[in-house]
Image (tube, rainbow, N blue to C red; front, side, top):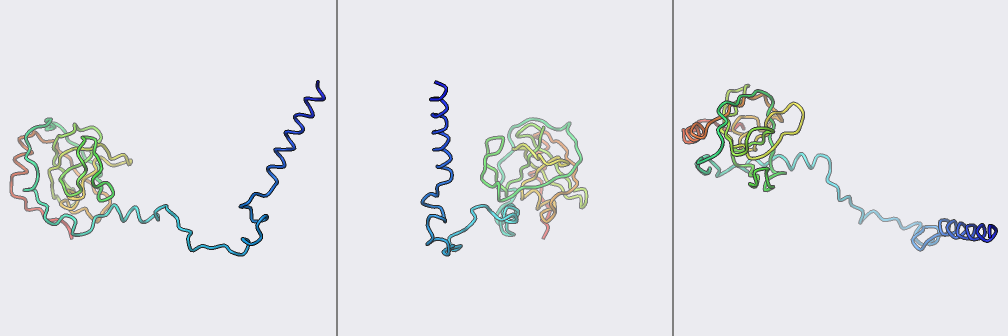
Length: 197
């Protein structure tokens, strides 16, 4: 019985080894006509170039044309964040996320005055002030983030432009929570902030 078992295992091993060594129909060694016909005309990577993802994140200069605070939805409800204050670095996100669903369920609109924060209640409103030029914007928290170390808030493209930080990746800011009444008053006040060039 041991001899029969050893022969059986030996036969299986021979078949497996023969299958590994034998050239297949697509093997260059079995088809000598393909050895000199390597073509690169149809070879193309489907992966984006490294710089392409960064370019997709930056909206063009005319992306915010026709948008203004008068187009914004009225502030009617939401949590009171008036006791909140924080300082840190802000970043912004743009075209690459435009149209994607946010944590609040809304679609991200890079031309709206919104922001992402890790802990503030969704639908709360905050004033964000650029500490370098003292420009301020009022934004609604409708998403979660940022998740990059050292950043406290991720602004929409429109908010970053109003703060004069569109060309900068990050900027030191002060965040002040607002009640619904304060947010409504600030949004209805005349806006004299100009976006950076």
